[in-house]
Image (tube, rainbow, N blue to C red; front, side, top):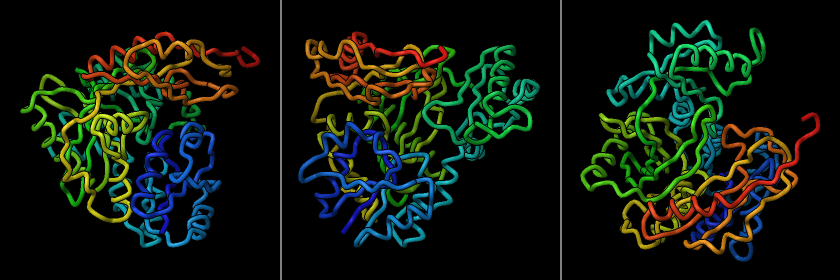
Length: 418
């Protein structure tokens, strides 16, 4: 039997392949760009290798043809936001286990999710769609207030997100959104419609969850550090956050209610939230396992291959991880994203050879390779790699990862015309 993945997150293929083989299945990746998985494909060798089919994954007919060529296809995995709806549609079309495509479509629309939760009493604020032009500023101020957040309904990797604290900043952000959308009458360059929602004051976290038939289990909480304005990008994360037991229990109940209201009843979810003075408030829901090195952190800390649950769900069976003891048996883990300081072509990194001098079993996970163009540095597209470190607590792991990451510097060559 075969388990296939329609694209995937940059990291985790090796562990997914091991999980599929443990279940007695071959594992195949369908991708339109195997360079995204350089690190994983270089390390996922031997008995737990990944078979790769190169196909235009934006072409539904090409994907259907590739899946039809696989013998005894038993399950279809998707761990990305971009391909979540096509994967759900294909699974239903092929009679494979999978989520309700309509629920997936709801979760891909951040504005609809916010409005749904507001109606259910699970979000203090709502979402208001706005035209990407400075003249929309008054509507935002009246409907949402200031400070506010502007974002797009189907955005990923912190792209097209503006945090605005005053009226002039709001007009400027709307003007920038208009430029990205292509201007008046232009073809939209925004991933979905633009909307505004209230700014949430407090630290940012993510709840990593697993659901089956409506029951949701909280696997743990990550801290998440973001950059200062004007860039809105993630800088670091640590797992597991040591919340007081009563607060952790209340959080598990809250996130279960949020996912139920949003129609998510099976599989992993990565739920970002801000812990405000009034309690948790949703930022967004990603109906997948956590990206970057989130899942790697869970595997190490919980001392279990959490991707086995991913395979279980793809095969239509209750994931064993729902009932397994969740006493952290491994170290706490933190990772720091290393960004290019300016756009250009990556030539390499300075400082990698010194990482083994730092405590915490420090590891380097490259996201880019020498020769890659890095045209954007204001969001996650500017990340060139990640430094991961371990420690007895998440706080210490964060300190270790940060100290090591500050010694790594991407070496960039300016592109022509700069």
